[in-house]
Image (cartoon, rainbow, N blue to C red; front, side, top):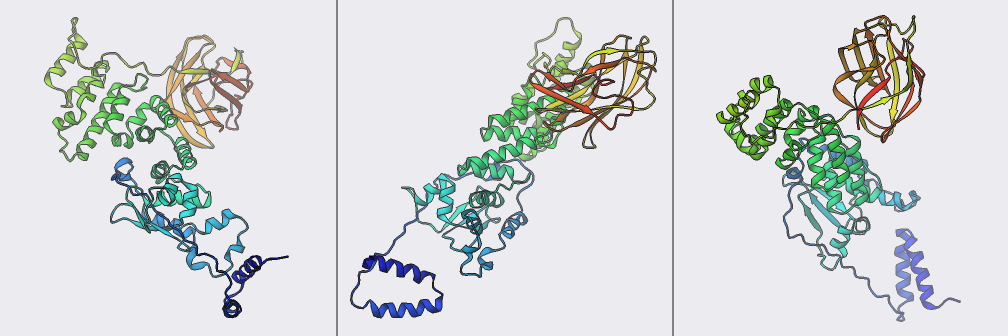
Length: 517
């Protein structure tokens, strides 16, 4: 049995599903039939308000020292992903085309259809007006919930957001609407800023993971300053690992000149910085020149010294080689005449003057060695070198930096060898060096170094190779291990197809990998 209210509800439901032609006819007949005073449903009223921001926020460009900004093309690409849904939805029952709520929400991404709020995003002159839907945004972010439904909310149809880049804002909206994470090197930092501002933690975590996987010596210094800004300690630690191990590459990168003064001082204070002090000095001068340009000062030696301030005394000039100081720092012009004279006396005089500069050398990093053989041997017909390649493949379970190889030497007395070492990943050359080493006739290993340590990512096989030229016979390894534990790092080894001189997992050359972890 159905009461009057139940019948009205059923008729209303059916009425909403009717086509427009039937709906209009049904509406007329309903008005005639209900003229005898049936009860009306109360109207529904919605009040949507937004949170007023009183503080003026800094522009993202002021916070992120990246050289590339999100272009209008990037924004248009996001818009094109939606195919202008508000124009393409022709079917009145478009909802039935999508089987899940996620797919239906995705249709609303960057879509004017049913949009009840708009955002004007970006700096003046480079803004983009983007549509939004308050309910969807409030579900995805506690900040949006407070803006639209909180106690202090205001009812504004258009919200200006000058401190977020349009491409980053769209990346955040895409995550909220579509549950999809779409990051690129150009926008990830700005997207991280947006995710932090609007408290979207899973997107922020994805941004940090993206930065960690793309971390290298070229961007480590810039990411270090920004990881401190965003309070991401894990990313900060990863940056320090790269900067310490590949210090000279990091200091010579363009990104080093973009860091702030506080980050500069923190780098110069590092005891574990694995670099020559003359390289540190030259990098600091490059930073000072860039800072003069940022402050709109001429790049004179006086202005360079001025912008450096107390950071100048963090350069350990007295620990340089005398030739490096005499031909470099002493003639740079940034040191006063008194400082130059005192440092020369520090090198030569028995009674050394007091210096404001730190005079203790940096400790640097201690290299570790992964030894893959349990024993070594020599025979009258092994191990010979005739321009052939000894090679082995390896993988690690955490990021390390390969600094060089330990190699066997002559089994017939002292001898000198010429070694060409290479490190590849899937055929791509990552590092190489040509050098010589002297062996004393013992079964010890002798180190051969790359010019710069090579960054090794986990769970990927790399190929270590060497071509030796020297004494015909040398020691070789035996009883090789497929897995070796070195401290907190696990190495795995497998044979390489590049090996043409007999080296493999069980025996041969390249007994050691020298690394920083």
